[in-house]
Length: 64
Image (cartoon, rainbow, N blue to C red; front, side):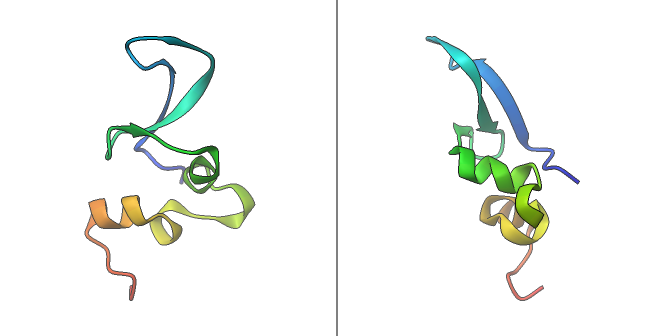
């Protein structure tokens, strides 16, 4: 399951981007493309097991 907290936005409210950028709705910030790879389950990554933001928001410990 791709992360439900990831959105792609074409502006930051003040300026328009040429290409949509990854935005995390949990942190309220744009994330680096490498972090969006986790969100989009690229390279065998999974938000539930590999993303510190997702895990903290879901109340998951790293031991789980």
